[in-house]
Length: 317
Ligand code: SF4
Image (cartoon, rainbow, N blue to C red; front, top):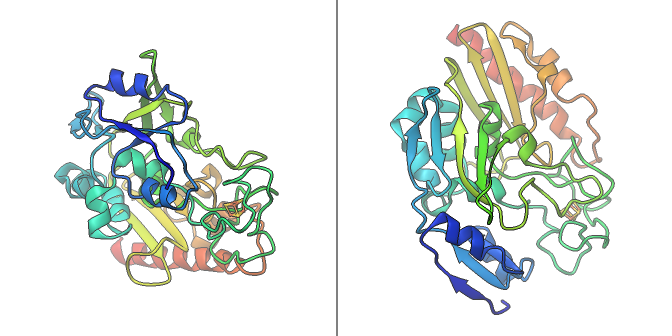
């Protein structure tokens, strides 16, 4: 690990200012960043510890939603009675992720910003455009079984690993930020994560030093909330694919997908009446998919997962 300096500010303004130093990075739970630093994939020169900023509360908004502080731990978010009652898809996504120990440390903002688990990203002996821009992509033509089929580019086919972000995409969350000048932004989660294009190293819309302060959920959507994660073992594994869905009491269904794309994937064309068949949903959601011989199975797996969810919906109706 390369040497670095460290500070622990006590206000948001101090933290945003500290992060304007060259090579600075925020750290909260550290469940991803520390691993990346040990492998020298991330080499920050200065760490700004945000754990004392007081951004660890979940509050009701005037609009009938919830504001989740950036530092709310995944365990606490999943267990919050309002989240369990009104945003069950979010609780289900959270508890399907990582392990209990990791969820106790991992934060809301850190979960959104976690990096891909493409094996070549972590193997510094192999080319990877995300780790080292312009070096190539070992996954294209390599081991691609777990990689993306939608939203990819010639430069990168990595997936986004978060379960939580898929549920937040389904719920139309908004990410709130502040920068060193004190300017704030509210970024719809649909726009927060970037597709790789020619610059796979740029994964989100945050500017250097811009701090996530919270995530706002709009009013809850009444209905049946589902998070179905398909993985290679029963726990402590990233999604091969996942489906977040709400079968609304208003007769409309919405879907978001994980494990298929470099960002949580959601398409208006896949949504509509709850009576719409799973095949039509899958066809619309997977439109434009580009597979490798190793990951083409994800298309059938997505359709079958939707079939299972729809069958349960028929039982629940
Ligand atoms: Fe790197 Fe992306 Fe290629 Fe994986 S898929 S090796 S993360 S460029």
